Length: 432
Image 1 (cartoon, rainbow, N blue to C red):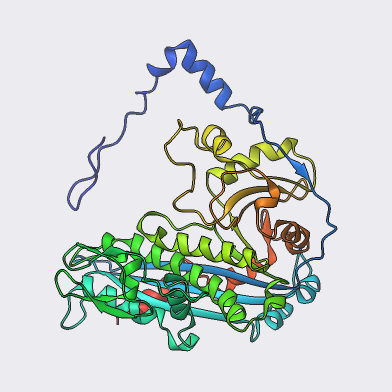
Image 2 (tube, one colour):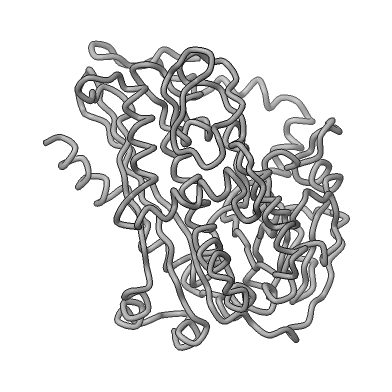
């Protein structure tokens, strides 16, 4: 590795001719030749595509969820960092979307659709060098997260959803919250009392918040937090917004509305690492709803990553209006290229199974669709509400971006915090 540049001296430059010895090998030259081919080589993946008909009735209501974050850093040491986070939920109806021009929607039409149809949440986390009077950064971030989840501009609804999921309040059982590690003494806390917002550690007497159960503190130090904490906050809050709509209709027994609504999230349906504690309650709810005869229509769309790259290759041979749900063996061999593991893909972290979807030659999507209890299967009908989801998505296709869906585009417009000019504006406020 070369030396990096500093304040006084420039960095070390790599050799311009050091690669010549490498390309003397015939094997290397053959690999270079294949690398430079204009078209990618064919991949013969054993994808079992199924054609589907658009016979089912499209879903009438759409709730789209997206989030954004932007971390700003001061220009001079000692460096200070603040992370601004925004999440949004947008309500749309099928008729309004059908009125839009998919290639060049009129800005005024977009404005009319989003008027009184969007709700958003915004907060800021101090990551480094910014102190709150009387507390260290570790406890300040814990308190900010607890209070931000109770955002009164949203009537505290996302926090109510956190309680609803944590204690599985859709039935009458008196459960404790999932267990977690105490943020003070690091001992295992066997959950808070049923319905509690705060509590006390039985080992050290330290004060606990329900939001500590999620596990943000496991990534933080006493004086600083990594940027991954703000990313995790955004993903958790997106998930809570997703289920806030579901909870609202469920508690009011508006099951007919739920049966005709699609909840569409930007990104896969998963919570990784310590944040996966909520995955089991989420799966339990989908299973409970299905046993009650209530079909929920939930999907997440992935825009980047290994699954999107894989679909780009295998979709070339797939027929129009076809779908493929890969099982663990396929994902392990064809997507991850990893040996067999003791646990199947996503068994701890995913509350939705992967689905590859090809609508036409220009639109192919990677979706996540729930199955309720975890199922390692490629059976299409194990995916909850998949038939009506497939019947609905073609009307949402956008021609403004590659493989885009209009509801997610619009939700992103509400939630987006771009690098420029938004980040520059946020930095101006942060420096005051």
